[in-house]
Image 1 (tube, rainbow, N blue to C red):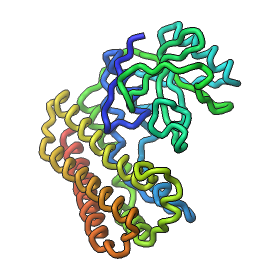
Image 2 (cartoon, one colour):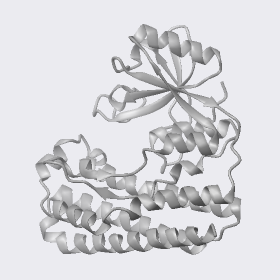
Image 3 (cartoon, rainbow, N blue to C red):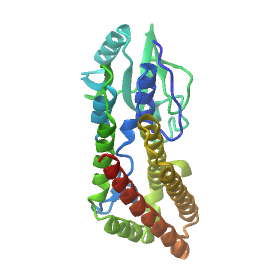
Image 4 (cartoon, helix red, strand yellow):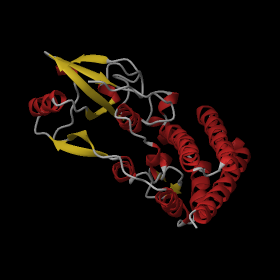
Length: 314
């Protein structure tokens, strides 16, 4: 089965898989990033800070189906034998399978037997007692594992993909999708969300925040901030794609968006250093200045992009 792994450090593990499938079937994929410009902070109880951060990306499967003609299908299984039987059926029909797993059980992953984090990868083939996998989030090489080493959550499911006709997407269709995504961000009280975020950063509990990780690279808050930055870099890819495909000039806003990404990156690095040294209180003025800078840039860009696309569709 020919699936060309697309490895890009800005893509999360789920996206890396569906993008690899999409490009291997000569399909575009960029519209799935249309909801990736969003930041919400919904405080619920005494959770770690990263669990209060919300990124509005739930609609991407519907978008991928409607705008790129690739439908994700869920298949339930009863036990491991049933799962392997169903996987072989799909592979025999040249259909890749996406597995929801855990990096703790992925022998090729640096966090193997170290930390539990949800993870997705592809199965593209099998031999007797062996499974052939792709994990473009980590590597472009094929991975061969024993069937017995394949982790499966009980009573869970795996995913396959149905390739349909390429949709005929007009310029106005694309603009409507962009406006819809920006509206989700515009419709919340952005100021209040950033204020709550700042308050929790100031009153951070180091023991709780660091207890969830086995290394500095897996601190939940740092991983969440990296995701925010990387989602915006994916959004830049979408802006460039729309500009090229529909002849819409948005070069200035792409540069502004890149500056926003750099601000999120600086904040993440600053906060990581403060977490490790436990110096957030001493450095809070600098931290607050960076968060305020990010807030101003987010507000400016969401309004500028919304107004621009609203006029472009007229």
